[in-house]
Image (cartoon, rainbow, N blue to C red; front, side, top):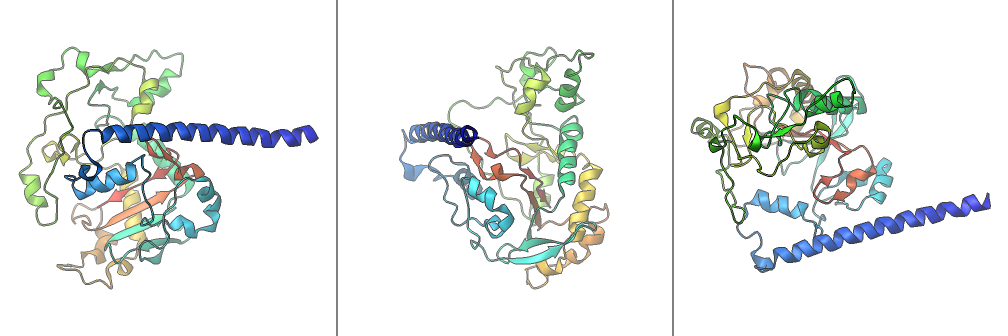
Length: 358
């Protein structure tokens, strides 16, 4: 028993040393890339021509130096049940970075939970851990099995001729020996595809895009004046691969209006794909669960038509416009690893986050 008792700390120490060595390699690699990016320009010129959104995005995605999170609201620090998660994580924000108020939200008969509203950001509602674990699993299953497939475009549609059943379903069939599932073919070498219809990426440094910001005043003109966006050119180096090997490269699937990543604009000429009933029903339930009097009732907003008073009945119907000035973010963290920043991937992939923007 003594032998067993003394071996456990050694294993734990060895594990810590291995993790430390791995972190040191990641740090050195990030530092090397950072220094390389500054080789031909001084640090004060980096990001000088970036729009505010890109500057913020770069700030929080940077690997070296690590981002300063002292002005980032981190409400997990107020939750004693998440102390182990915070202790094992590698980043933490500030629980008093913003002034906020707590409101109760009750979703479809479940126990009331706390949500947070911010006077400095009218219409922004943060709902941590709103959905149950079963609801989260159902959403993950739906997104892979039913949503990430034709006609919804994914990040891989640009480069591959994907199976209409979707990568996930093709992957599942490939695990059954009774099925002969072919490899997914690259578009660049597929006969019958006219590559001249695609837009090739310009050579040289990446060109920044400065689009006019959409607002309630110009959204109509932007939609009416939108022209059809030619698809981006497929990669000439993509090779045929099995659905199982290609699946880890699946990053996103479009929902609703088509978004053109090359121009950073919606392509309104292609119409809109209806949102799946599962997600539509969930969005409607969340809107009904929020008491909007606590969000807008004490605010005196310019041109406020107070249409928010009817959102619980009208949201998601064809006869009434959707809320255009509110953002609901139900956020779900499913383990301590979600506070660890992984190189190139942001938060760990075991985080289930549903972002709903109106």
